[in-house]
Length: 92
Image (cartoon, rainbow, N blue to C red; front, side, top):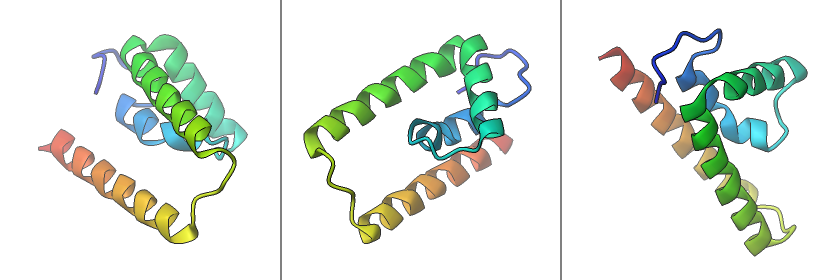
């Protein structure tokens, strides 16, 4: 996804880090970059809003029980795989 406008941080990079941002796992600099991008990029902001809504729904449904380490590793591995495929598609 891209809005077609130039940004300091590319849309693909922001969307690849949106879950980390939502989880509060980015350092201060990373959070600032993502927040600044979302403030100026409508398509990414809409995508972020969707991701945030899904995360809240899952959090509400699952309560405070943390995901097992094995499940977390599988999910993160799949996300990294998809991000790699998206980057490959962008350069093609």
